[in-house]
Amino acid sequence: MKQILELAYSTCPNDTYIFYGLACQRINTKEFNFAIDLMDVEQLNQAARKGKYDITKLSFAAAGHLTESYGILRSGGAVGRGCGPLIVARPGVDISNLAEKSVAVPGLWTTAHLLLSLFLPELPRVQPMVFDEIMPAVSRGVFDAGVIIHEGRFTYHEQGLVKLIDLGEWWEEITGLPIPLGCIAIRRELGQRMALQVEKLIRESIDFADRHIEEAMPYIRKHARELSDAVIRRHIELYVNPFSTDLGDEGAAAVKALFARAREKGILPESRLPLFAA
Image (tube, rainbow, N blue to C red):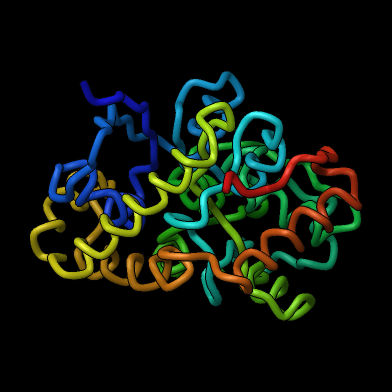
């Protein structure tokens, strides 16, 4: 009998692209069956606090809070260059006094909020929201600014907003490293052998999507919150890259640098456990 593993990832096109082959049984999942849930990334972060899933997409910030129970996999994540969160506002807002403003963020355990905390000496009044509600709220004047993620970097102009800063570019400038945004994590109690097996399946799933993107598009589009095909494809091209297949030395260095800076500032707890599951 195949072992059932509970797997969760976000509705974003990069995740549905990565997991299409696995979710739709277009690759051989060997001795595993996967029970799959899809939801907003901050919902995933908070579900992981309760250990709800065996394998889950997490913001790297959330993984930093959950190091004792989850280890990071080296495949399936969102790490790259030119893909970081943006701080946006209505025209006329001055970034120099942002700490005095109200800022909407896509969740308190998101990497976006972590980067905001690293960027500013003092945090402003932040309000967590579902990521796709942030731009409309800022546009209406409910908040002075917002930290946006995912496809928002392609569409904020449509809401009459301007970019105050690209937090990914800021990170790359101060570290020389790509920006680690999200990862796939596995419960540590499942062991290193299973972690390596799941990493391999994720790589096979990515390879299948690379070779059959048109087949995968209906599944991706189904969960893409009414995005146009053009935005979906730009999203995939940006967030699914060689780091998604394997973090490699550079990707691993970026993750370690993010955790080290956050721990130094007291944002993430210390841990003696290795960051990676295997």
